[in-house]
Length: 480
Image 1: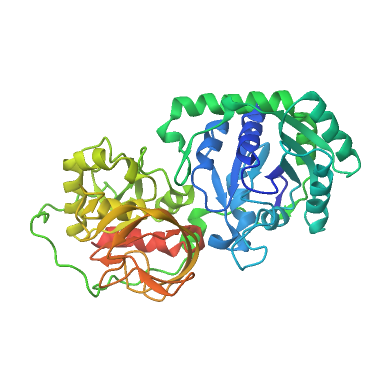
Image 2: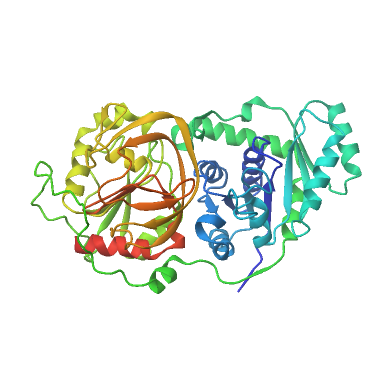
């Protein structure tokens, strides 16, 4: 199979240069021309893809060579871009920045090479003139395999400033494909973990994306950018397919008792059998809404391919789990911003606890861990785990190599996965009698909790790297 979707990688010398504004604006501007635009984000970021989805009307997808492996970048890209006229890939950090101590691994440059895609460098020109040529020359010549094929100048102060920048770049051999003036209306609010997600400010986010598109339309040569995208090299190989990878993954071992598992709490024990869908398959409820916005689209696709009916619910609004729920997935997000509201929804907290103490499989990452705790910032949560959670001044951030310590609904002990931590909260204690993971970097430690069917941890993982996780989880839904 040959993959020939026109594509661009939007990169920058450093964070804060304007990649998200330019990438999102380009996506929206091209979509408004009637093109089917496939949005992608390098790295583990969950928030930018929400803005990308708003701009294109398609699911924003991540391309992370650390979490998924370099061999999956092109297949995952082809899966997301199937049937599209153009793909726009927003980079992460600076062009050559990747996983700490791992060389180019997980960098925008590496992904651009794996996709054989031209790179457009977004440069914050607010405090320079002729020096911009030296900066662009350095980035364009650093790695001959990375094709820096154009520059978009951002935060340009005046017509005279633009003229000086263009004159300097005439000598670099890298064409200027756009010039954007400072524009406060395209700014998006941020807080302790980055931009505020679309789900929390949808109306304002729609306006912001519209402003980004208009700024890009005024300041960029869209025809030249599309021509550049069409010059991307062809890729060979098959697109990633959830059904195929689930079918080829090893069959899940039979569930085994979990060491250190807490006994069922009689307060939450239900004698009612959990209903099944008509064909005998379980419903897997996935938390969504403003408090739980962090998820990878491939997770739901893998669960569906494994035989589950995936239904989204909102812990801020829904007082009961979806009918027929036999398993629960609670991903990341910002429960710390909504602790009083989550706590006030007592009927749902009790329903979650009843499901968990009844032995149903529950997969919780980061925000999900906080929601299952006894309390979050002194607000009562579900009480599934006997831990206390609170906000912290310290940001925990970085990739992690992990190995499953305990048999769980997700994996057998010894299963290796790579993950990512990104939080400004702590839970006490940090691990249970049966920890979820042993992690290496920044120090060796165990963390998380395996308790009956519950697997709860701070670690964000990408199941495309281990599709057997979804197959095992759904099988546990059938047998629990």
